[in-house]
Image (cartoon, rainbow, N blue to C red; front, side, top):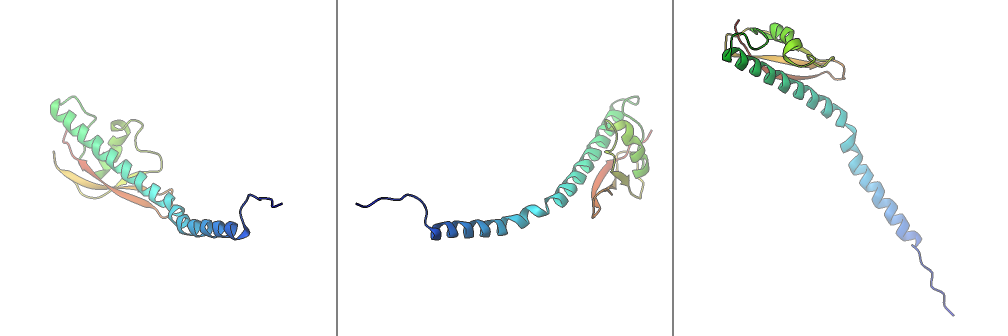
Length: 132
């Protein structure tokens, strides 16, 4: 009498292990460097928030001279104004720097820097200036 045995052969198991090894060798490098990309995306998000906040400040000041949070003429005054324009100010490791000045309604490009990651991540924020 013959008995039927169920299960996988040794060759089938080896083939599955080899396929899993190849898949992990291909997929693993794609996931290793995600922290750097995440840090860059976070810096770009903060830059977008700064750009939006200064545009809202400009619009509020133009709608009413008593509205808005204050004048902005360069990156230094924008950095100071972020404490009141953005709820809670800039996130703690980020800094806003840059050179150049602008007049009412014009823009200046400032650099958002995250020094807490290595390598340091930066992004550009377009700041809308508003005179007092």
